[in-house]
Image 1 (cartoon, helix red, strand yellow):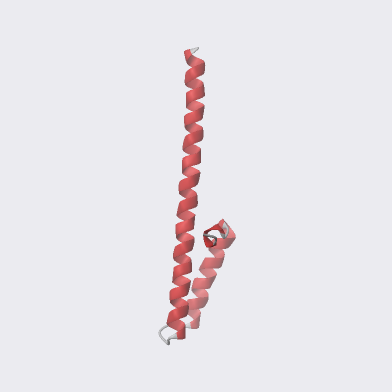
Image 2 (image 1 turned 180 degrees about the vertical axis):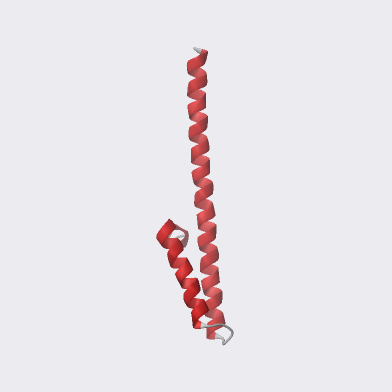
Length: 78
């Protein structure tokens, strides 16, 4: 009986760890997406006020689009 209990407890613990890791990964990707979005806004603002370049804005947009392609756009909703 104790082997079955420990086996079941181990399985539940591993499942919990996997869910926790997935949540941490999601939060990290959301933060990265938000940071890229902020950088795009800053590049656009700088460009429009003569302090930045179109190339910098396009580079920031490209980085954001690459992130969205790899991880989705969930960070944009919320």
